[in-house]
Image 1 (tube, rainbow, N blue to C red):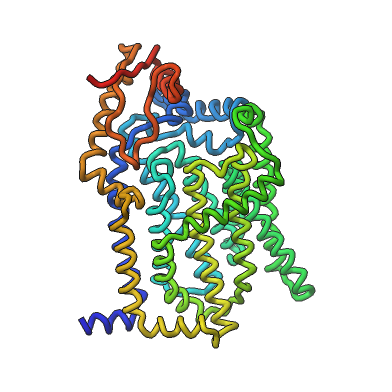
Image 2 (image 1 turned 90 degrees about the vertical axis):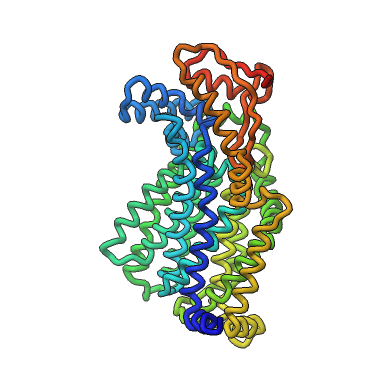
Length: 508
């Protein structure tokens, strides 16, 4: 035991990275396993009517893409302006065959995982100067663990293609764009154009995403451009071509703004607005700060605190050799809070609400990312400016007893994660429970019986029974009869499979 302790103290980052990677992969296995029990539902049918029909009639990807463009134009005129989301929402894996729908969870976890790793890598390596891939890996894995395990609605965020595509996928595109823009700032001359073009393409995609992600993209690009102008003015005659090159960030900003305007000004938005009562812009902005404070407090859980405390010694080792100047912590905290608050403004303005659970999935992820980057900046600033402070001295003591600190916080993390009163609090715990008690298998079997009826071309009037298995991670909503709240799902299924009617009876 003493030898192991000595090895950990000699190279703590390597050992911690191995432990973090093992724990993260172990936590993801139940989620990926649950993906094999999910089936299409709700708006998967609504947006996939024409693409599914095109595939069934022609078996051609060209026909499917044509149908996707047709659906996008139709919805842009009649319902919502989110052109990128609509186009991709028509391309659910289930339109080819329901058996491919399991790919949804791999797509969403891959996008969110890949984008956060890319963003954290760029910031820590290019801006903080961290040469250790183990340190960067520990930070990325911790943020990913918190993001996947504490989703407000994991069913909407990972297992339902339509809902996850509109928010989690598009937020991942935003993280990729941020990584590309920050790489453009630091890239060598030969690679700048590639990062700039990538940023411009992603800006086009984000212009047609959900409004809260599209707005974030505009804010991010505008902030980088304004900071470039400030930097050039501050340096005056000392500013060189490197700084002026960064003014090309105007290109992705222009694409962002044009795409976002095309999104917001779509004729379909005015039709959709009649179904919800919004509020004035000033009231929406003011309330955004209120809700940001409410959810920042709610999402700063014991698990999150333990995770960030676990990172403090790692961050300390990263920043102690950094030559990059850091910002005053209160300034970055204020700007970060404004960015976080801006995520609430679109839903408050459009519907006078703080947003549905699928919106809060990406809000929570963004909150953890902002907290992490603020910790890095604060630790760097204190390291450079306040070496004699109490905060700095406490951190030095932690460094001396790092293995004990790691063991204590690891035990807290395990206890909080594995022993919650509500077994649906953390995503993997909920998945293990549904897999172990057979609930996930029963849910899939009941839906498989329905799908067999839906795919029977000779059967035009379909009767099904209500679902009895409703796993927390998989169940979204069930069909109903005329007059019920969920009858719209029946209409979508009838259109999707070419039926005349769909009714529901109680199981005998």
